[in-house]
Image (cartoon, rainbow, N blue to C red; front, side, top):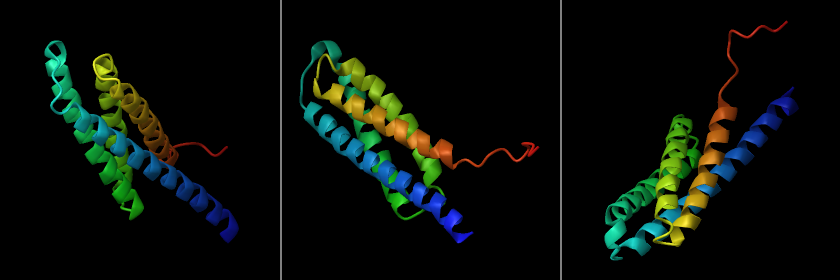
Amino acid sequence: MAQTHAQPQRQMGKQVDQCIEACLACARICNTCGDDMVGMSHQTAQDLMARCIRLCRDCADICLLAAQWMGRNSAFSLRICALCAELCEVCAGVCEEHAPHHPMCGDCAKECRRCAEICHKMVMESVPPASGASSQ
């Protein structure tokens, strides 16, 4: 009995480790991307660049928070991961839009999408099955 219980915990531990790694990688590139844009001048894309910088900073912050909370097994880490996935998707969209003006945004968008996918998968696989399901 203990062996079957340990297997799901080990699998979940692996998922958490992968999610933490994805969050840290995403935070790193978001910080780099946002910092690289500071001081750049693009008259035609000024508003887009400002939105991109803000979202990169916000995305980096939520990714770091998610990694920290997962690392200490917070009871609220799944909620943070769900928010992290959402913010990563938004950041990826704006970075994709800004990529023609700032090539690093293309790489940032890819990493954001990867992080969002991993966070979303972990959240979905952690949700228990519906209690109203029939066992027949």
